Image (cartoon, rainbow, N blue to C red; front, side, top):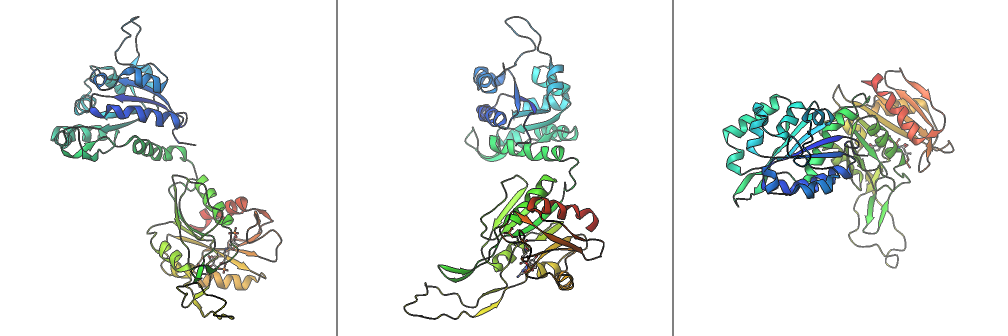
Length: 406
Ligand code: PMT
């Protein structure tokens, strides 16, 4: 569901050639679940008709202080109070200057002055107007008064000059509003503002172009961790091997697909800043020393011996670089649970918490919808064996330990 769902948006449209983009913008806002009330300046009506915008928004477009047919009053105060968001797109230099100095000679500016919600201004004008000290001064003043200016794009302008001044594409404007509203939606979410790096799934180590060494990891445990972290307000970078099961797309989710352990390591090293690393991937410990370039044929090689070399230990290498304000959580997949070995693994890889699961437990480990885990923290404050639970619940229990680990 979009963060714009249920939001009341007053969309101010002013006299710029980019006014035509107000039409797809309204459609996208409505598709995202918002209610849109359009307010146009007189000049805007020269570029796009109120009929087009009222048809798309499903509401009569307001242009004047009162209705010219029946004289009824359009209350800018009511509109200002109704608006959760006041968006001017496109905004001309003239409207920006009027807004900056409170020159309330049209309905749009009076609405702005009565608005208590967030204000967004998307300028669109010729490049010299955009970079003129007067426009820059208006933008600076509006910013100081709390408005967000959505920077214009570069490109060919109506004058055929090339430069900065194009209205950003409607998709980009909507994306920007949705991102900004994240703070509001997750205002009291426990992981809000935290960035998690999660590894998931198996890795495939190539034998030849058609064969690989892999394992049974489905990606289900990693998916559960990512989705629960997103639900708790975190931003997630999800580095996944070739898994069947992946988290649903989300604005705060960055998904990086890799194949081998080497690629997974490079992807993890590329994640520059994160607060929590969770190493859930079942990484192959060995790879073929010299993978074949052509398919190996049984007719030519009735038996095949593979020479395997050790893969990098991603969790251990990331553990060496771990900063004091970062938390690392690792997994241990055992065929028989020996807590002292699990403790050793935690120390070797510099984990703050380890999640041990064993294939001895029915319903635990690879592929299953459930898991049964033992949580051990490095400082000894957590030592807990959880009952068999859905992987989503296990993920939530793991994430609940974070406040203790920070
Ligand atoms: O994906 P599913 O089907 O839902 O299955 C979930 C799971 C069984 C894969 C998961 O619960 C799990 O146990 N993941 C870790 C599997 C594993 O590789 O365990 P390990 O004990 O071999 O490794 C210990 C830790 O080092 C793990 O955090 C692992 O990600 C990491 N590691 C291991 C080897 C390596 N070369 N690099 C690593 O980073």
